[in-house]
Length: 234
Image 1 (cartoon, rainbow, N blue to C red):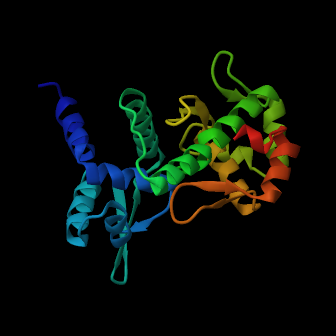
Image 2 (image 1 turned 30 degrees about the horizontal axis):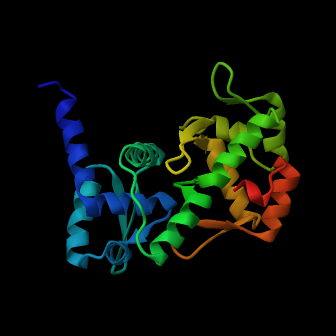
Image 3 (image 1 turned 90 degrees about the vertical axis):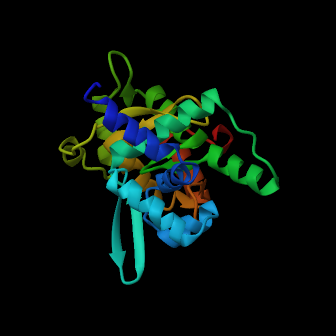
């Protein structure tokens, strides 16, 4: 047997269970969830959820910590988050699901419009931001995907420390295939930094406890000023 077959099959087995897969998708919001919150989200008993989470932690997919009587879990790192998002994109392309019921349809629309993909913006908003960066020549996709000098200046004007990001143990900028739009949005260290700035400046805010976000009136103005984007583009 090939040396990589066994680890790969174990990872595939971990993600093959519907409850464990649902946990990973929920955790793509980049936050830590309690075991109880995930159990309620999926609709299974807390004891069952705890057993599933233990397997995911032991498999290196999640990391956990205990605070008092609460157990918090999150995705192990951005590489795992990228893997989950890529798998979700592939699954959506090959086996699309139709939402059932008004609540599920409403949630699906919000997720498709604007959401977080671990620590960066995704959905139509994320794709629109990526397109605008290319249109403004802040990013070039000729011979690769990278910020131009003009783009680095723009990042600095956004109070983003490009030198520090360049030292990060992750790609400076990369394209991430958006699983709802089937087109790329911005990921990597700069994608995370821009998402963080959008939250800290009040441009976006979360809708409830999930991954969906909405653009605030302040954000509408800021996206128009900074990137020439308007609400009808997401």
